[in-house]
Length: 195
Image (tube, rainbow, N blue to C red; front, side):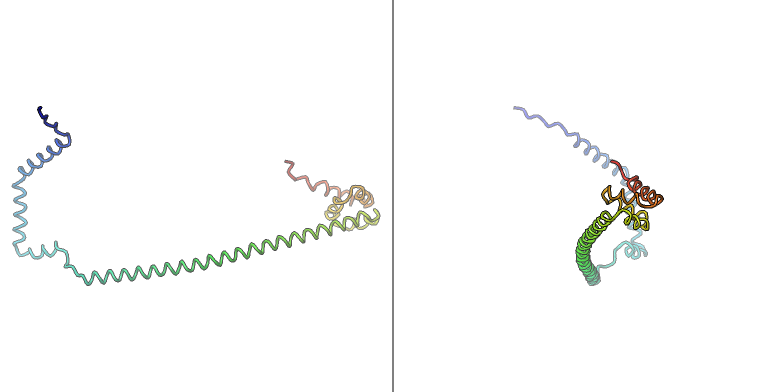
């Protein structure tokens, strides 16, 4: 049994080409690289070599300064964290106060709605009673009162009355007053939506 040699991989061939290209470039430019290295060595052997080393080398490591800087930064972060915690506490307290005020406001709104409902109910009862009184009066006596009322007010009462009682009062008032009351009553629902 014969073993077959594996076929070269395309990636392997590309890498091999790059390596050969680099090798040939180094051979062509070898003299230039050697001259450059020699120039640096000559420059460092001169009297400016100390200055050149001083410029290119980092400052000596000072562990005490580094530790002090780290401790200072840690203290700054601790102070900032404490400030954030204080602000968070202030916000928590403000939120609780707002929630309490909202609850009190909702309670006051509920009580006000109940009071208004009671007042509306009482007002409606009073208007019903007064309307009943005007309906049971003699038409001429009621007409004398209606002639002294504001036209809108009189129209409101007449629209609540039974039609026969309202007709009796309206026929007993002065004709100009009756006309004005009729116009107000007819115009009350003119602007109301029909759908």
